[in-house]
Length: 237
Ligand code: ADP
Ligand code: TMP
Ligand code: ASP
Image (cartoon, rainbow, N blue to C red; front, side, top):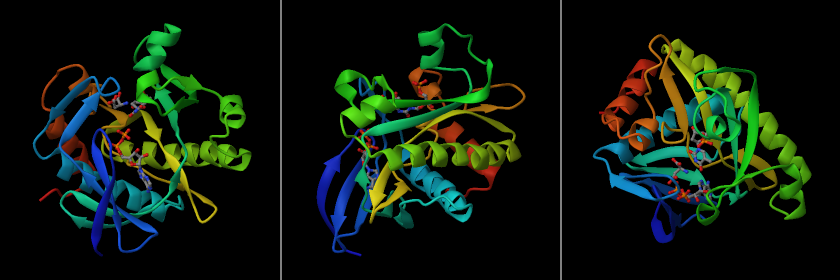
């Protein structure tokens, strides 16, 4: 597989074309960003840890029947993926209240959400990723109806699979964000699933083990990601 040109440099990953027009290389950098890019720092080992974490989760999801873009790991910080036509919305499911839902709705952090909530956000840093609904997606043509339905269906299926997986390592999947794209007409899970884009708490102490440690300046960010990975049987060597 030959790496060609940089297509896009995001806040945490860079995307490269390859000699295969259907494949891209994702480079997981050490850059760590929060508050829509307002806080950015380099954290040692984070690119490698997130690349391997993402590969592990994507393989679990694929094995459980979720179509994903993941093909294979190429190096410590690079993975090969299918090139998707990305839908510019983020799908968020919450099992426990934390983050923006507490600020928006005044609900206390740590409240169990039963049934879990589903929210769409527009992927747009300048507008601070505003919350949107299905009507906005249809009106502005961000995705076709069939894909809107499928995004909800797959995001909830991922919840069932990953809640159980994290619970097996003694952790609560509080919430998470997924991004989808279209590959040859099929809706496929893209981007990443790492502690950068979800909240994970120890099930007994409710200690935060995800990117909230970075957002809130708690320290031991990458160390916590590795603890999560080790609890699920990942190997970062
Ligand atoms: P951001 O764009 O939010 O700063 P990243 O730094 O993670 O995010 O950049 C990765 C970019 O690559 C994102 O814009 C994401 O939507 C896009 N992307 C992820 N997976 C794929 C894929 N399989 N095909 C095309 N684009 C992808
Ligand atoms: P929020 O509480 O800030 O709305 O975020 C909910 C979850 O989704 C949290 O785990 C972080 C993740 N998320 C991202 O990773 N990127 C985003 O742009 C958004 C809106 C949420
Ligand atoms: N949207 C992500 C977050 O809030 C990344 C970023 O804001 O830069 O963590």
